[in-house]
Length: 103
Image (cartoon, rainbow, N blue to C red; front, top):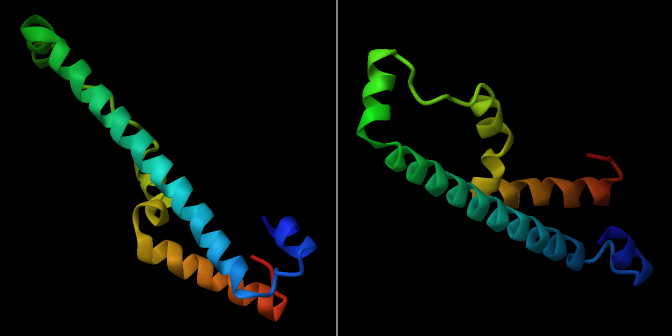
């Protein structure tokens, strides 16, 4: 996107922020859709286990496995779930481009 806007001499215009925001919002939407689909799939798997497996898990104290990286993943993807954070990240990147610093 940067190269395309630069080739058209629009990199330092408002187009860069607009395109960057549009791109990040699109990725965030896809991320949320994939996460929701995975959550639904896990819920379906839990429901499909049946009474015997649930009883076995309870007796053997074997709960559903948890993701050991869940907290790190939540931290990394927090901006994808929060529109205001994405807008702030875009604003900082556009300011960095205008001032010449890199992010």
